[in-house]
Length: 35
Image 1 (tube, helix red, strand yellow):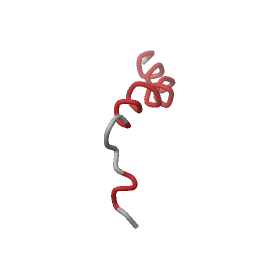
Image 2 (cartoon, rainbow, N blue to C red):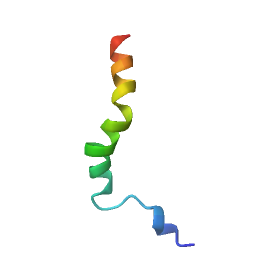
Image 3 (cartoon, helix red, strand yellow):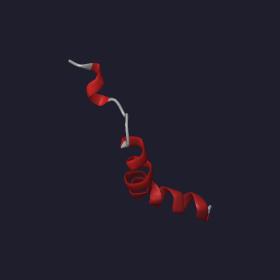
Image 4 (cartoon, rainbow, N blue to C red):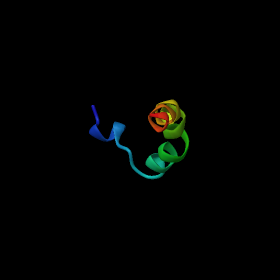
């Protein structure tokens, strides 16, 4: 298999950080903030 298939290059990290990251972690962040 090609090792580059799963590389996070280009705009993927930026899109993850601005879009998917908050969706995944918003509940955990709210819980930690309440503590």
